Length: 216
Image 1 (tube, rainbow, N blue to C red):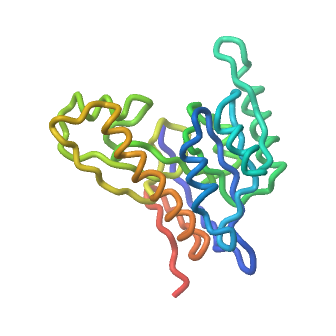
Image 2 (tube, rainbow, N blue to C red):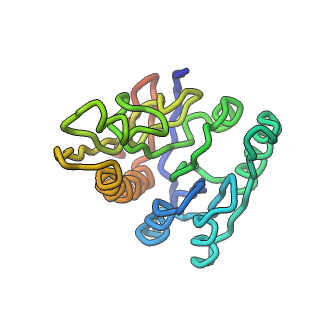
């Protein structure tokens, strides 16, 4: 379910915005953060994951700290996992948590601990096509335009306030993999752009409205 936030994350003064990134898979979004974030504006403190994955290898190669809060379906106690994830995230004292290809629904307990401080990148123009099959759903529905959304994470599935969006045209011949690659190209650039803008201006969330603030 969606929820209303009334929070402001001010732009840090005299230091970079501190972030932790969460990932589950190949880590291409993580790599985009490693390669393209300006360390004078955004400091990537650590990479976290819910399983062994290439994203953790990318962290090691980049000399970044990493951590794993393992989740095994039908085995892991969800409430305990939420508590363990909270503890791991708290230890880094980050300003913002970035879900960058993290294929696990972040529980309400975690969202409540970091209200308005978790953002996610999603391969569709929300509120259209939430969930893990967004690219497949877009093609099956026959849309002419899809894209990438950066949104605040709430207790629902891809239902939080929208921070930024960018459109991607769907060609009639596009298959799922080709379209997903086009969207990923936009996602990688958009998440870096958004983080740089938040670092400079902060982020204000009032109900359904999320706005990168202005220092003017």
